[in-house]
Amino acid sequence: MPTPSEDRVAAQEPAERAEAAQPRSPSSASPSASGARRRHALVLGLGCLAVALLAAGIVPRLDARKAQAAQVVVQRDLVVATVMPKPAPATQDLLLPGSVMPWADASIYARTSGYVQQWYADIGAHVKAGQTLARIDTPELDAQLKQARADEASAQANYRFASSTAQRWQTMLQTQSVAQQDADAKTSDAAAKLAALQGAQANVARLDELVAYQSVTAPFDGVITVRNVQVGALVTAGGTPGLAAMPGELFHIEQTNRLRVYVDVPQDDASSVTPGTSVWLATQQYPGRRFPATVARSANAIDPVSRTLHVEVDVDNADGALIPGAYAQVHLALSTATPSLEVPVSALLFRPDGVTIAVVDAHDKVRLRQVSIGRDFGTYIEIATGLAPTDRVINNPGDAIANGQSVRVATAAHGGKA
Image (cartoon, rainbow, N blue to C red; front, side):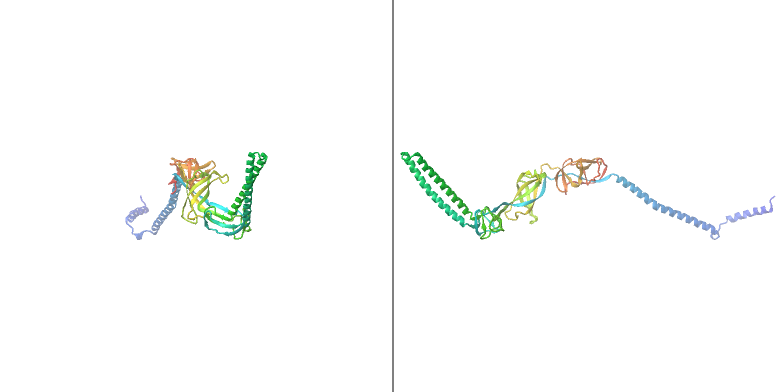
C-alpha cells in the first residue's frame, strides 16, 4: 500500500507538468540562461574573427608562393634578345686624317755671290713663272766677265794666226818646200790655239750664266711664303747669306692652285683604294663644305713600320680656300663587289678560340659559331664567314652563355643600321 509521502509526490507531478506546459514570459526567464546565450554568441563571433584573420594572412602567402613558383618556372630559361643580320652596305666611308701639301714647292737660293740690290716680292705675293723676285749686284763677277771676254778675243787672234800659218805650211809642203814634220807642227799649234779659244768661249758662257743669275726669278706660278732677304745683304752662291739670322734660302715659293693631300690607309683597306676612287675633303674652317678630290697615286707598298699604304689625293684649289700645311679630314668611298652580312658589335663574343657569335636555333637552343670579321662600320661589324641571313643572333650575350643552353627569346629586331 502506498505511504502518505508517496501519495503526495504522485499528486504533485501532474501539477508540475501542467505548470511546465504553460508559456513563460521573458521577464520570467532566469538571468543565468540569458548570460549563457550571450557567452555563446561572443564565442561564436570571436571564432569567426579568428578564421577571417587567418584567411587574410594565409591566402596572400599562398598567392605569393604560387606567383613565385610561376616566376621560377618562367625564369628557368635565360631570356635573350635577338637581331637578324642585314646585308652590309656596298660602299663604306673611310675617314682618315690628311696633310695638305702644295702642288709644287721650292726653296730659292742665290746662284751668284753679291749684295742684294732690290727685292720685288714679299710673303703672300702671287707671282708668275719667270717674274723677278730680287736683283743681286755682282761687281766682281762683272769684272771677271770682262776679263774672260778679253781672254776670248786674245785666243781668237792666236787661233787665226796659227790657222793661217798652218794653211801656208800645208801649201808649201805640196811643193816640197818645207819638211813634213814642220808642217805637222804648225797644224798641231793651230789645233792647240783652237782648243784655247774654245776654253775661253766656255768661260765667257759660264760667267754670262752667272751674270744672268743676278736676277732671282720665280720657277713657277705660286705664292711667296718666305722672304729672307734685305737690301744690301750679302749673299753667296749656294752658301750662307751675310745676315746671321737668314737661312740659306732667299725665298720660298709654293704652288697652291692645286694641292696634294697625303693619307695613310690601313692595311685592311689598302686593296680597296685605287686611282679614281671617289674621295672628298672636309676642314674645320669650312663646316659643311665638301671639297671634291681624286686619288691620284699610291706607293703600292705597305709601310712595314705603320702597316699603312701611303696615298696621294689631288684636289683643285683655284679659289685658294685650302691652305698648304693644314689638316684635313679625308673621306674615302671604299666599295666592294660582294658585301657580306652585318651585326651589332655588341653581338660578338671574344673567346680564346676566336671571335664567336651566339645564335638561337629552331628549338630555342644556343649555338655558338666562330666567325671571321670583315669591314668595321663602328657600332656595326661585317661578318665575312660563319653567318646566314636567317640566323637569329643573340644581342649582348653574357660571357657565361654555353652551347646547347635553353633560352627564351624576348624580342627580335633587325641587325642593320637604322
